[in-house]
Length: 126
Image (tube, rainbow, N blue to C red):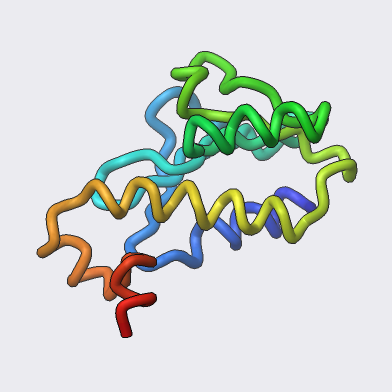
């Protein structure tokens, strides 16, 4: 995955905003003011930090050497992924979407409605 593809992926979610609160080289993607992805897009190798369910985070780290506990983040809830080609792009896309969903799920219902977000539990009830 290229830096441009990662940026587009993170930017395409409803309500996503790219900000630079730490430095001009680290893109921080937020929804409703809450972080769901951090990526130094000019870094070599490219990497991204994403929220994750704690149990899944451990499983992903065990299965992929390029996935480690979140760098400078709560290691229980965040993973850092080195995008060196060893982790399939589809899995990266799923991890970004999961991170976004974890953040949006914690927002008030009114914010979720503005984003036109449907919780998985709501989707399965239909």
